[in-house]
Length: 357
Image (cartoon, rainbow, N blue to C red; front, side, top):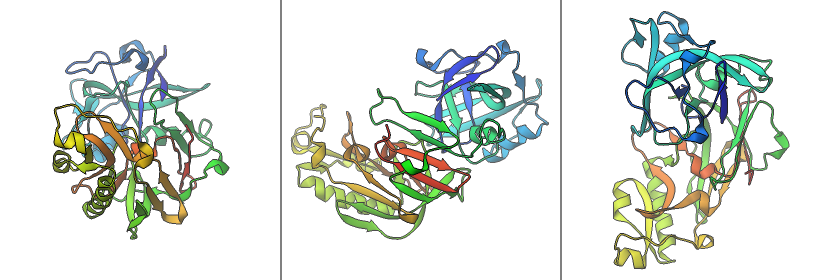
């Protein structure tokens, strides 16, 4: 998503993350550790060159909001400057951002809003974007701040589509959407129990024609997570069912991936005589199919490319994993790629659209 920050404006490309709340971009000066920002992500934002940029003071109410939701263990304050600070880590530590909170002008179309976001001075981030904008349910997330401007956002909803082929365009829509276009159906959307995010209720998982799960459970929608994380018991059933189906086409489960809580397969040739080179899988139509069913009748009938991907180091892998430490299951972005997904916050429903991008 492209955002225009400050005056004079700097246009940055940022990742949208429904699994987090804080928004941040890499800023000048980067005092500790910086990540290489690609040219297409735009120039590094410098708050000192924006005449509308303001620091967030330690005593302000705005400073206290991130401290609570990010569960910071100490006061998030740089006392010498009276500047509010933040620290956020993603997943198991694959990325983090540390910096100062600022407010500045964000332009959306012909309208302007005052946005609070993080200016990162220390960042570990392997993606190409300038930063991450949080779409979670906390009051300081980008979307919740935007919702405070009804002249800009007349209806509280957002929609996006992430393409399977990253060279093709996706889309991001803020506000009203085409309700009739959601041919995958709707399911109730609610605030997560354990995190400031949004969740759905899963009711079934069908793999290779077999119904594996029939009980209801919460699933967080996290556009920032690649894999879909399942309960260990559900993951074990999926592993067994898909492994049996894959053996019929000459592919075997790898032990290394099992230790890493992934599901990956090698062909008989690669499995028996592995020399460091893996032959990419190409017969996608031969792969078993999966479907995830949600409350209210909505369903994701997944194509093989939503379920599997070629990993140069592990073989043909599934986009599903297990994480016993999680309190909820997670719907990751690989299974929803090419689907249009709509978070209708105002109407409390979530919609799917097939082959949207």
